[in-house]
Amino acid sequence: MFKKILIANRGEIALRIIRACHEMGIAAVAVYSDVDRASLHVRKADEAYPIGSAAASESYLNIGKILDAARRSGADAVHPGYGFLSENPGFALACAEARVKFIGPTAASMQAMASKTRARQAMEKAGLPFVPGTLRGLESLEQAQQVAAKIGYPLMLKAAAGGGGKGMRLVPSGDELKSALDAARSEAQRAFGEGEVYIEKAILNPRHIEMQIVADELGNTVYLGERECSIQRRHQKVLEEAPSPIVDPELRRRMGEVAVRAAQSASYTNAGTVEFLLDQPENDRFGNHRPRNFYFLEMNTRLQVEHPVTELVTGLDLVHLQIRIAAGEKLPFKQEDLTLRGHAMECRIYAEDPDNHYFPSPGKISLLQEPSGPGIRLDSGIYEGWSVPIDYDPLLAKLIAYGADRDQAISHLSRALQEYFVGGITTNISLFQRILSDENFRAARLDTGFLDRLWKQIEMRAAERAEATEAEVAALAAGLFAALGANGVTGPNAALPASSAAERSNWKRTGRREALH
Ligand code: MV4
Image (cartoon, rainbow, N blue to C red):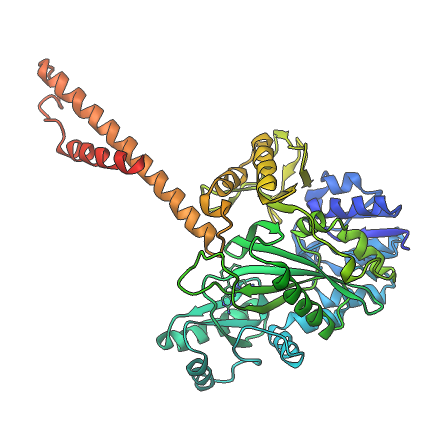
């Protein structure tokens, strides 16, 4: 087993990994940029090394500096966390060269999944389901038109080097194909230095469900169940749960087996996640019927942000497992040993303002009241008096609830959200109360459009309230003018009649009031 692990990350995930190290009797080494000198991960680690200025390219993305810290500390392994260098094959190779074990898959496995077209080819070769479309990059507009004629509109253009929604275009009809293809190509070229673009049939109102897998280095691969991740905003996940309310044991087994075979096709080792799209039954976006099809979308070759919900329903510790696997140990269980129990739900607490276009809200945390108690796990990277830097992802903490069933998990979560207070900065905590009290959410009628629809509803209600208030002020003013005028007050406005605009508002107000209640 390793004696010392360097954590090439920051924030809540660095803490999460430090805790696992300490539970396993392993020393934990932190690295930090200039703005993270006072961060919690630095305080909780056994040693910490500065690696440069705030810009990630100068610190958390700088392979040379991180491996230099590994050498100086004598660490025998590196955990990359998520984001930053976690899916960078060059980093995995550099670790091998520096004789530090990279806790994750091999560079070759990462590369096999990094190209979406390569991954689709591997799925086809293995006879596994993927979204219908092309297996290779498009060569011409004519070829794109031919494929489009076969699979039909709407369709998706996707960058082979993309993922997580980057370099993606929905093409509603043939009229838009040429312009969308040109745009997708140049966007991909700009973003990834590679313009390869391919076609997928568009799945409308899908549910986003992903399957966790773990594979040891001796050839054993198992699936640990799915996570429902349909509640997203601009491809940023907001709330995740396990198990998915619409996946039954039979569908779970089928998806799990596909995920295992997808991983095996890339000789995958360590923890990974296979993403699927589930289509909704037609004409019934909210139908809770069993969906007809699921399709491989992409594979994430890292530990994911939302891994705790899987830990709570499986009783496993994914970071412990990752470390054991990287140390060459055999998986301590078989597929048939695993059972899911209860229900878990995670809220991603961000330093951003949901009422102001989700703008980041960095600054000093002046007051912090963190929830705890029955059914609550809080993976947090903050403390009172700490300043949230503007330089990185604004994820502050993950509030995770566990209950015997979905309703119980929701009630723990809702209670914990009431306890949670972060002063000095704006967070998205209030957004979760709105989600949890939504009737469609309660009934688990979810799809990837859920949050946008909820948001439109909230905005509409806010606009109605603002209008109602405006109308009340106008009506009050009109009444006042009328009263003052009757009393013979003179002045520049004395002769004004009760404003006709205010009268109109008054009409509107009455109407709105009825609509509101
Ligand atoms: C799709 C799709 C519909 N059809 N592909 C968005 C993130 C990236 N991982 C893939 N995404 C999608 N790919 C086809 N062929 C719809 C989405 C999508 C989506 C997927 C998961 C979660 C939220 C989403 C929101 C909008 C679109």
